[in-house]
Length: 215
Image 1 (cartoon, one colour):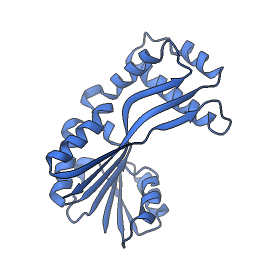
Image 2: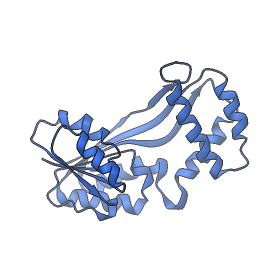
Image 3: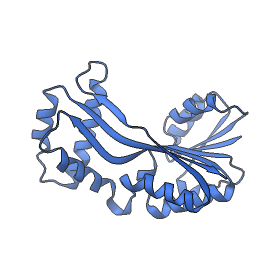
């Protein structure tokens, strides 16, 4: 089974998925960063080859499975369509995991949550990128390509009041606020962060996994 992981990062998708595929496997891990691609290949429990390049550079001939994680929102609608067409032409199954949906829910709520969320979503859609529209776009494209499509919600649930997950929650929050501030400089991000970081909070960040299987 030939598997290609697009935008592989450090290889977390391969480390999770490879042991679950009941077949002999050869992975190709693709990333624009050569160091990340090499690191991912070295971390997989099956034979893996690092490949440096972008989604547009990929030849899927002979590929059985195409996977990615947290990548689709960084592609344009045209790029998503081209990727799906290439997967369908190769007869490959696809698993596109952890695509953002734009849904963010805090507990407790804050008066500026909605403004920050709208600015973040607009930033995700900058320059024609799919952003939170990516799951709908890719599911529709897979359906048009004749694939059987399944979607599952896979939200991140971060607890800012828990000692174990507080650092991750704070890191996510700062990144979310930074992107919103770039999009809308009128936002009082400093005041918002001051309120959030001085009290416990929990947040659910919407994501979706999309599976596409050749019929």
